[in-house]
Image (cartoon, rainbow, N blue to C red; front, side, top):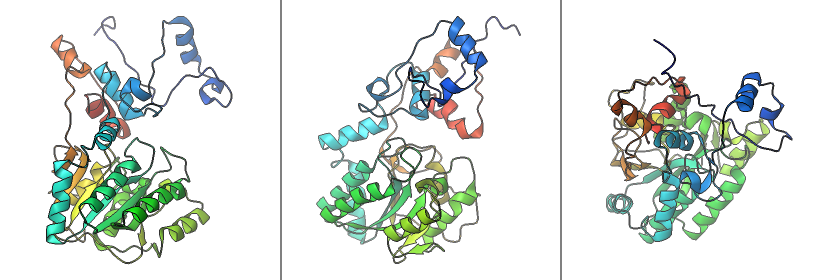
Length: 343
């Protein structure tokens, strides 16, 4: 095989450019190969955030968005923007999946367990989407909402949960439809690399309502874990108040819109041949509703179904008789496949 017809696309995830060299790790590093390329090869800068990549103005980009746009070669409206617009226009409140979920739970007098990342980061979720759902529950006079929070500290400052919790409590004061029943750092609840020992204690907490880490209030949990030197991301799965397990006939609503870190916990509830760990309890759910489509092997009911992106690079290359080889470690498997193909 000759090299003359081989093109290599190397993605340096997290690499960037800034004319400001103060506290700039890339500028301070010894990078002879990169420096050689920069000085001798044609190059240009791409805008990787905000409206240029289908995100709200001022919203930082991320690896999912970056890979999706490399594969698509054109701006793609992101789930964050799409859901934000649905809330603004009122389409969110009229969404058939959400309305049907609330009506069924109200009719059967069963709980809706809402779980997801409480964060303004906008990478895997946005807390405003949770707030909009709680408002919708109030409009339908439904108040059996059990809230299970996953904490960020990665796409947001490492110790921001107090601020986020204050915003949630303000919404619950205005719309008293639910109670926070558990908190877990995303390190545990949102693993994506088959480290099932992290997912297991979260699943057990959700399905039994119990945890060795038991606190009367979220504030007590925060102060205890901060005193132990833990940031939000690493909070161990913690029970808040009285047990509120997910039971037969209940509904789960996972409000994360990004799939890669939502799939493992979802699989623990839905996968028929699940082998990640021995589940002590397997509740028979009325529904498992996800904010977006997660995986064809996971039968969730998506609030916003996948929007197919046509003519991505992965489609165009074989149309031209060209072969492609994609290589990544397991952490980035989804990025060079699912996201690169349009999500």
